[in-house]
Image 1 (cartoon, helix red, strand yellow):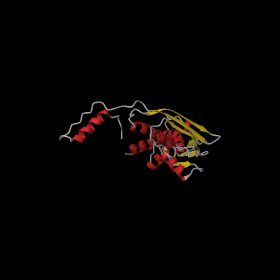
Image 2 (spheres, one colour; image 1 turned 90 degrees about the vertical axis):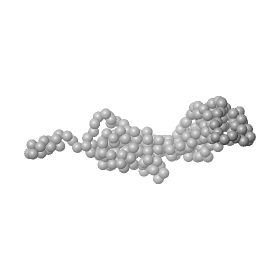
Image 3 (cartoon, rainbow, N blue to C red; image 1 turned 60 degrees about the vertical axis):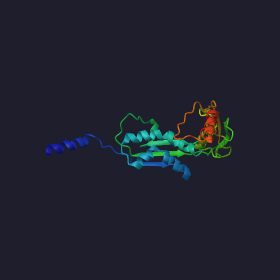
Image 4 (cartoon, rainbow, N blue to C red; image 1 turned 30 degrees about the vertical axis):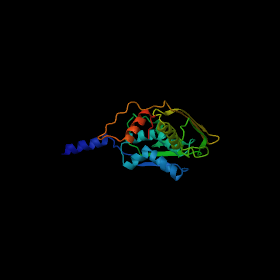
Length: 228
């Protein structure tokens, strides 16, 4: 028994303890409540802390991934001139080799400077199918939230698909942040693709259809493809 206790004591002295992060915090003094919520939701480091994770390498990997994720959070609220610094135990996370094992992580500090909030300068999507309604948020002078760009592009593509162009998709885009003017210029090209019609339509019914039903099926065989 004495030998066993001695062996355990030596093992504890030789093998360093593995400690989780004790302090993970977001430092964004200029952020509004809405932006702080977006940044908190975007951060993997904060998520690990909330979940009680302990592996140091997980925090290093999360911190390195948070640069892009926090920038995405800034873009979602219209901030395109912000900066992000992430310190893991006082060292910039981008400078830490993720393949070198760490025995502990004591602190992760996510520092975000928002910079100015941008509005839409140019906000163009062409061509549009007849009747397509783009989101009102995607227009000159409104806050240039990145999600509004995606919603507008989706609406433009859906308009063409609903008009019988199921292969419609975005064909190209140009997004430019004009920092002196604090404006974002967006130009998106939509490729409608070909208009498609139904081919052979085979419908099996359990009982004979009336005259009106048969006429509707015949019209369906000749009509353009309309997707709802």
